[in-house]
Image 1 (cartoon, rainbow, N blue to C red):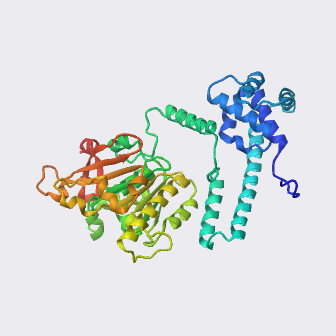
Image 2 (cartoon, rainbow, N blue to C red):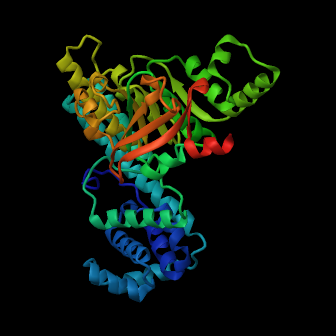
Image 3 (tube, rainbow, N blue to C red):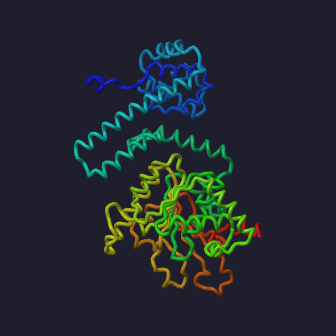
Length: 447
């Protein structure tokens, strides 16, 4: 169609043929090429068919040469007349495979140009049709451009063969990493063993009554991800100011009671510790926004502009606004608004392809029970939160309700929902002077 309209579709037949020829001449270059290129980045159908066949054969550990590739193309139903002579010509035109990555870069560049043109046309059509307000169209346009930057398509049907190959790639990565958990570690090993860390595109909900330590455990996780794992972390604080959060981060990192940081009563050694902690935290890539009236769309827009974002932390859900709403809700409309927000957060986690940790208040239902440990039903007045979340963790400290209990600093992270595996209770140590949590095992070892 573009050719009929006089438009030239960006592509390089020579570069595509050179990539195919290099892979057939020297199969040793195949792993490197497969990391760089996707099959749908080829413009010419027969080149794409050959590449997809080589990709599948490599994924399943089959021998790759011109004869086996032709045979497999027949099995896959993509063989066509003249394919033998075409492959022979492609190999003849490619004298060496040493420049294959340069050819692959050209193919990828032309594919990006094609997608950029298609996206521009889609955006132009949306504007011409007037299918929404300006803010809505801008959000949709940003989402499409962001997907391009990430090398992904927004939606669309994908053949199961491509999905299976993605799963195989993930399995290979997991096998190569040994016993390491697949997600970002929380810094609390007992918890990691149950939820397997914080995984891409997951919505992790940490829920509790006020005063249980929701913000504390979220900051624990953010600090560990940024310092120990060198991750880029975005924190949206709708309750505390940036300075309050920074003070709590310093208290955790330096192990200095937060009370001392408030009053400035520090010993010479504590001054040295706080200076070291400040340097350590300043070297991390933690971003903080303390705007109390942010919507999920605004958070999402900010996150899209952060290169190589790894983790998002939101404190907390019930303070957020749905797009275009103020604070004057009836109970029914508020329940619907929170349901909409939780759904949008799950969509954000999938789109950004990072874990989103969101804190949530529990209802007062547990206060009337003898056993005050949180249950999933305590979330229900907030609509569909429990449906959208992949992991729900309820925090509980018996010492909060009963000062005379045997161990007032024993905390429980109760896994109420876990799409990846088991539910259950993980015991943690609550460190009230630092408003922090630690693994029970690790804290005893340190002591």
